Length: 252
Length: 189
Image (cartoon, rainbow over the protein chains, first blue to last red):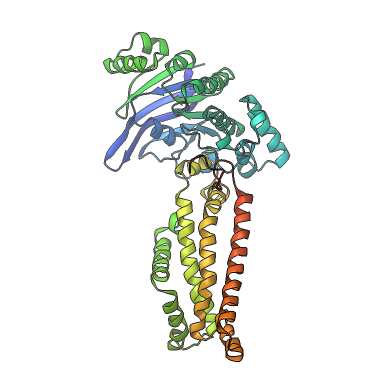
């Protein structure tokens, strides 16, 4: 079996411009079933934009995104349907503030997937249990810590049975002591075989879970490869500089 | 809604409507509706012109209250809703509106109070509202102070009850962490 066979996500030559600023200048990569890809790079290099191009929250100007053989950049594709299959976890959690943790997880099942309420409730509770928060089901986001909120938002993404989950700096808005609980949940997902594309600078985590790291800078892929190669023997000078700086900051 | 989410032509029309009704004093609007209607070949009764003038004016104000509420909801809420596969319509209905309505209640109770009291302006075009009714009683009894104090009390009671009801609604819909705190419950005063 060639590696091409179980490619689930393929990003081909994505370009995106905001006004006069070219944010992405021809980015390509592919993700196989069950793989964890990590995207790193300085701020403002289009990492978030790239994730949004994948699930169609932003339309790329040029280039294609394929999910499971379907070309998402085709204007005839119903993106609302596609997004049901792509989970997204945001830096600022973005939990629905007027709903309890349970309702946050359940609302997609009820309103989008049209499951009967009791089935949806059972599933939502199972997801909350998976992230270790079944006791907090009836609390509102404002009553939860940042780490708990982010775990609820992971449960919300999981509940939709996604083929792929996108993580946009999921721990960057958290207090240091809360990062661990979120990374534990993510590590658990990796082990369960979930396909994930993660933007993160938690280098310890990245190193231990990623199958491949993509270093993005200035809207292009500077270097990509397995973590061992990138950390120990990067080919590009910029990659080395960036990783050194990150290591200093985070004590890698 | 149209101003925030509608296509450009719709939002332009709403803009013009809202500018017009918010820039003209209520009394002038009332006269425009009452006397203006005959210019266009039909005539509105005093009561109907008062209802239209005050109603349309208030809806212009309310649209602004609501626009502010919608726009104060972080963009991330819409993004998260779309990310789980909601259509824009579903996201507005299930995520944005329930939050915006909560934020709108306090300014709405303000608007309710002022519209209620603006009804006294209908006096000017001959509607028999509270003040005019009071005048009729004064003519018969020669007790202006008693009558005006009674009128003031009636307005007070109506406004107070309405605001209490809206206050109850506000408390019923309150979401932990987003309520408008009462005196004594505040952390910083």
